Structures are given as structure tokens and as C-alpha cells.
Length: 355
Image 1 (spheres, rainbow, N blue to C red):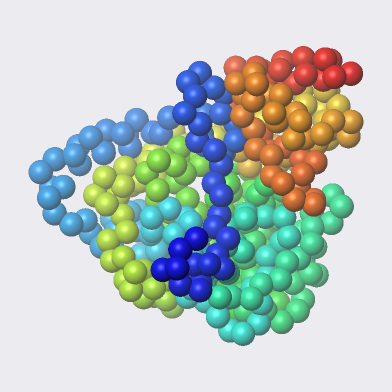
Image 2 (cartoon, rainbow, N blue to C red):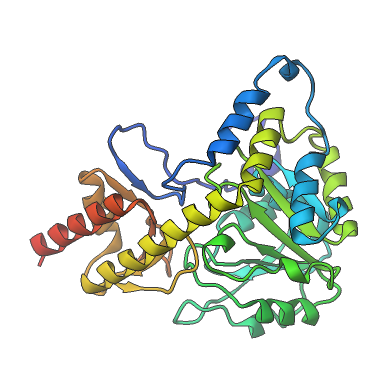
């Protein structure tokens, strides 16, 4: 607390990111990072970009990266916005599109940065409750709003909506932006990108942090109607006209173009996810169907916080989110086969000791 803070700063409740422990030899399954390194081509591109050109400012429009994304998606660069991680892209979108007096709508259990953005920009919001099975009822959005935000697949549940359901929602709210946050889409969900040219109120946000294993680089992007992209650019250029540095642009471009590496990495994660879900079920957990690089599970006879603490004592970190509906659950990032085997063996020991 400080007497120099503005009233806004006093009111803020900042987002709390997942722990980045300083402990060596820990199995880190708490922040949905890739267990595999980024594309070797991305690493080489960044090494090549580490030259005398770093004395120069980067391309403020990230044009080469936007052109590559546009080509693959059958769009134009005017349909693509690039930013410093999808969190920054989301923040710009909240500021650019959602100040219409009515509340912003998003699920009650979802990415916890959404209400933080609302607090930062003074936006009212309301939540749509997931049902008992953690599914999102689209009928909950049938009310006045300034915009709709949905993570698909949802975090922390991992459950995905179909593209057809997303299209119904976009069609039902033609005068409001519907933002689909696809941070985990590559792990098994249907992307809404094919709908972008059809609906001017649809904005799709993706990231290089998960499937492309570049969480440390901070690159995200949005796809939408050129008028939406222009709105994001106006906010960006009023905040930071150079969001992506030269190394980030080089690495992201090479990673995006290495489709073979992406598919191999994603397929390994999906295979391990299936094995882990089966193992947890055999241990008595109830596991939601996941289209992401994590699983969401709870044990009917064990306290989740206690389980997380016991795992930590064994040098394994998972994510336990406090809250009236999330406290019984553990979110477990998909690691390597060896890491997930170590997790299930530790849980088997913990459950046996506390039987």
C-alpha cells in the first residue's frame, strides 16, 4: 500500500500466475508448459537473428509473421494482429471492444485473467455458470452484454465447444464481439478460425506458448475482421508500438512454419494425456474429457489441497485453484511419459498411506 497509488491501483486484484519454482530436479506440472523444447528451426532462427541488427528497432507491424499466419489460414495480413503473448492481445481486446455499458460475459470457471482485465479497465462483468458436469450452457449468454469471452478449450476444465456451437453464439450476438481464446486449441479442439471471414464480430486469439513450446518468448496473435484488427492496432500503438522484438519475430515465424515439429509434439502430448487420464481413473479420480495439454481431476475421497501438498513433498507440482467450485480439483499439465508415470506412482503411494 502506498499513498502515491491511484484509486485504481488500490482497487486492483492482480492475476496470480502459476508458480515458477527455483528448486532443481522438480517435476513441474502446474503451468501447462510444453514438456518438449521448441522447434529446432525456431532456435536456429533466433541464433541467426542475434547479430548487429539488434541495434535497430524491430518491425512494428510484425509483417513477416502476420503474412505467414494469413497464408496458412487463407486470410490477409489485415486479418492478423501480433502481440507480446496472448495475454497482451487479450488485454488490448478488452480495452478495444468491451466498453458498451453492459457487462462482459464469460464462464464462472475459466481463465482467471478475464476478471482482472475487467478490473483494470473498469468494465462490469457477469459470469455464466458451468453445469454440474463442467460444461458451458450457451443459453447462459442470452442476456444484454458488451461482449463475450470464451476459452476454447476451457481452462482449467479442458472441455471444448464445437465450432458449430461457437458459430451459433456468434450469430446470436451480431452487434457484440465474441472473443474465442484458443490457447489450447491444437491439442484436440476445433478452431473457430474458418469462421473469421464470415462473421465480422468474431475474434480468435492464439498463442505460441503451449503447442509451440515458446512460453518464454511471449508471442500471441489474433485473427478477425480487418476492422477489429485495426481496433487492436490503435490500442497497441497507443501503448507500445514495438511489442515483438527481433528475436521473438524470428523465432515465432520459424516455429509457425515448422508444421511437422508441431504435429509430432502435439501427438506425443495427446497420447500421454490419454494414458494419464486412464491411470488417474484407475486410482479413483474422476477426470474430465480434455482437449488441452492438461487434465482436470478430483478424487471423491481425498482433499485436493492435501494431495497437492503431498505431491509437492515428493518434488511434483500440480495446480490447485482455490474457490468454491474449483477447490476439489487438481489441474495437471501433461508432461513426458516418465513425468506422468512418476506422478501416478506418487499418487498411488499417497492414497495408500492415507487409506
